[in-house]
Image (cartoon, rainbow, N blue to C red; front, side, top):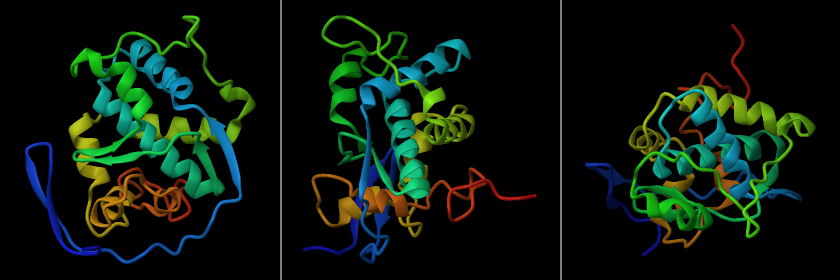
Length: 198
């Protein structure tokens, strides 16, 4: 049943997904290993400081795009956890477990560890990751979670979410995420994931 056309829903819209070709992006040999529950605090902090609404759907999609762009640029797996291809887009289970209780309302609290501490990666010590976070946040912060979901599900642009759905995979391939082109044009990025020159 693999590689056949399927129909799914994104927001209130029905989307037909055609069969996709297998990825040929290549394997990764390194893992940066940032936890999503730590990195999400940077996004939550920016949302609060800039007074820009951020619900769980939008947070999940921004975290996904950060991973896609980082993996495209640096050929390293970013998070220690893998995304799942849920009906409306990619989801990290740990973030869903933490923030689903808000029932779609804006997130105004930080993710904490078992001691109640707020832990964030030191982005100044990771300039490659900082640049990726800055690029994705700058481009995605004005979009809604539904708009980002539709972007990520764009057919014909190597959507990694689409490939996982079509092939009935329980997780989205990190290789496919690096190859995902759904956001590049809208965000003004070239095929390597860097800003287009003027």
